[in-house]
Image (cartoon, rainbow, N blue to C red):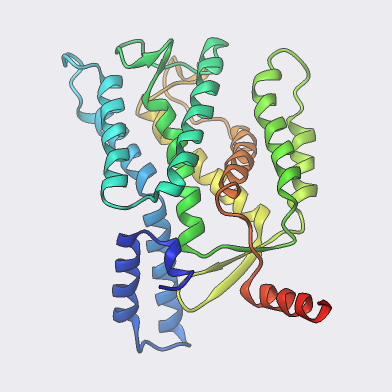
Length: 300
């Protein structure tokens, strides 16, 4: 088993081998090859999103079909469903044990933020249910865990590599400051624009390389951060429409979440990325890595 193979769970490795057998012999160039790469990209993204997608399906289903007079409160049902999804992710080898602790960390940091934000009235959940901490139902932490699940899985599935990635200690300091600002801006000057500027400076020159099937593409990492933030914002609109939680302006009737929340999600993405790099250290593209090793050998 190669080092690249070891990054996959056993189920993912079996799927990868089966997919390569199906695609073997397909043209390497031309429109058909391009369509294959697009299809593989979509499938990998769907696979990476499986935790969040299942959770979102459960939330929407609860809005549409869960009875209002059920003995088990809807929030408790959502919490139980989220726990079962997480157990299933582990049982069916969709997550590795190495990644689980990062996902748990997402859950803890997200729940801590939820406790504070609901207390200051930033958003609110239904009051029903017993599986909760204060005003926060326990399923809310799994929404942050879903983001963590996507981040660690997409790193593996696309064999992400980076050039000019900033030092981990710097990114950790910025991520910590972003997290603290989510709390502190209620009592002091909001530093989000300063923090956003720091993010642009720190990651502005970073290029991300991602493998689809045969093709490896590159893109500025800030563009990727923005794209994922937009996707989360869209999912947030679905979640609030389904009544999982509500912002103050939605209490009189559902309205779209303000586009200004994109900045908050973009900054939250930085926290997510930094936590993932604690498990998967950013690595340069393989050719660049080999060049560095040759330079090191020549120096010795």
